[in-house]
Length: 101
Ligand code: FES
Image 1 (tube, rainbow, N blue to C red):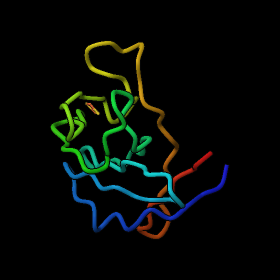
Image 2 (image 1 turned 90 degrees about the vertical axis):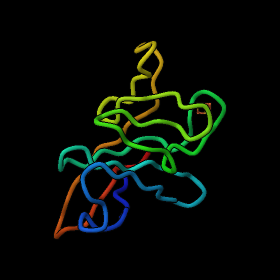
Image 3 (image 1 turned 120 degrees about the vertical axis):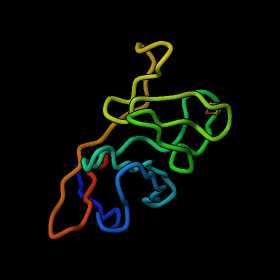
Image 4 (image 1 turned 45 degrees about the vertical axis):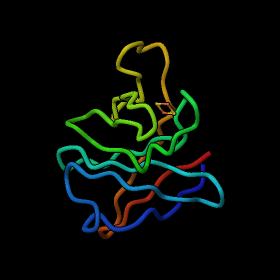
């Protein structure tokens, strides 16, 4: 899978989430307790922009209807059998790299 640059770790403090576009595909990139996680940026409910959501602990809340997903696993908190895709993250020289499909 190709690695794409998603920004600098220094620009994503713990507790924050940002939206990263790769072409037209959005990703939600989260910093939970100093570890960076990347998820599909499209909510499985009705397509809300997860990268524009809010992180509360490990829970990423969609800005549209507040469904919450574990940013580490992508699991929907009320039904873990439903999840958004997650992608491997690598950090090199302070740069966040996401392995995208
Ligand atoms: S679109 Fe994300 S909670 Fe509805």
